[in-house]
Length: 143
Image (cartoon, rainbow, N blue to C red):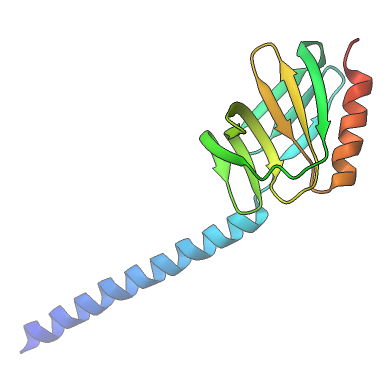
């Protein structure tokens, strides 16, 4: 009789622990997902992009910069990095092109930065900030 009580207590303890663990993991994922972001830094000689992945692109390596006034809805993670409901910060595909993406999915407007070896797509949290970033990049790229 005592063995059955002990066994039941052990089973209840294990299941209780699993439930607490699952709730904790879900809470952390929700918190992490809401705080997920990336940073854009315009430095003296390069643009730095930092998130779950990171890149530093020297201005002298940039061949072309183009601004598109549309939402980057067709961007999907295809490798390293992360994708949330809010953003993609990863190796990705955009319209069947391999790119390195730093984009907020719902922001109207994005920038394509083309170098010899790679294309990057970047935007900021608002269209106004994205346009400002584009204008700042234009002034820093050697002609």
